[in-house]
Length: 547
Image (tube, rainbow, N blue to C red; front, side):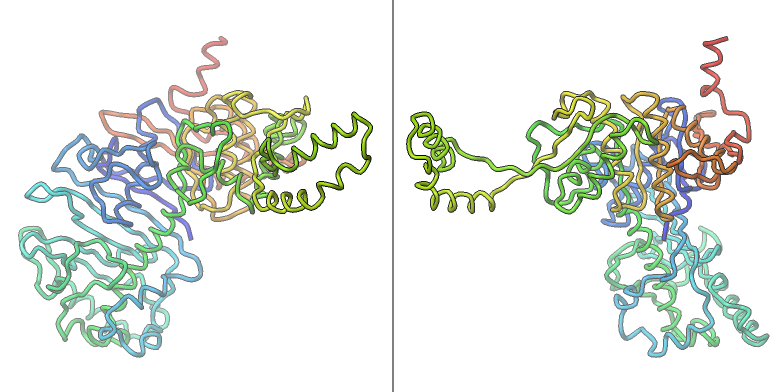
């Protein structure tokens, strides 16, 4: 299960609709303030809308204090209060298809008893999309104007708000993308055509005409067009809707399939958004004597502090070892920063404790040449205190300078390490599907920027559902990725270097033309080169300075 494409319209710097295909490594290049962060913020906005129904969002669960969307008026393109934001997420489903728990949320009286048997003529759902529109109503309130889903490449159903009835209305329905036509005979196909003809006559053809009342949601529905997640949409369909086809015998089956798609696809999109992590351009270094937060908080990834929480986790020894391998050895295909990270356990011993007093007593006796078994008098007391200490032991990260073999503090080894370590942790940790990071190269040496490309490439090779969304200005990072593509295609990868295929990389260049954001996907060839000339402002700057 993964999100494969994002489409935006009238969102921040995006006016006319733009689409971005999400490859395992998707890079966003472009001038400052062009709108690269807009792409990452769109994901956060959709999550808030689907998760809480909050359409006028300022702070987000993923962005915390690092992201302030400013509400609808700040998000809509050109601050046009009459504008409508449109966002669409395309999905690739796994073998489980639509979630089965959607059925248990339905009204039991509406569910057909033999649903599984009667759904035999349906195709498995391999792909789908969720699209929503947000605007202001006549009274100035922000509301969801439209919610649409598609199945297997075809538009399936659309719900839109009606001002006249103050309820959502089913404006479109087409089962074509969900039908296994190869298993249907001529008579069944004819019935399906009749079914769609009957539906088409009930939909509102234009804004000037009121929708048919039997396509509205029932009066007991208090929500808008967005899913409730805890219950089905209660469609107010009459008993003759639709025609009796082999797979939809009356209202119950139609209602079941409608809700399974409307709620199921939305729920899958929300789950993926909830598994997405965002990391901002400035990572916060933990203070001395840092105490990790025990309660999970997705917003702490935005500042980078959640990465340090992960390193402190009691069950994260493999993560610490993995991070140390990337940081430590400068002679291998790693970051080579010369530092090792381990977890150290220790006791805090008060100065008036039994252990301190016993040690002082034994030292005094030793100096005076007294009883050689000076420890014996303290035996029982020491045993009791040691038991108590073991229960109160503490842990802290220990960072070691490998070359000098000394322990160092994060505050004493430079800003670059504090900036890059959270990025590497976010990349290698398995708790998310989409890792979105702004300027991972900030404050690090050009060589390290190149090695970051290997971090992302290696993790893509480990998991086929991992996607990296990277907003960057680093020429070095992209050059390393291009190099790995070339070496992979020519079978000349150095020992330990991660393979990378050109299909795994999408290089997006963003620029403004006439006040509109333009996104150009730069094709990459198998020999690790760009398939077209790079837009002005990148890569040619070095040549201009040299020649």
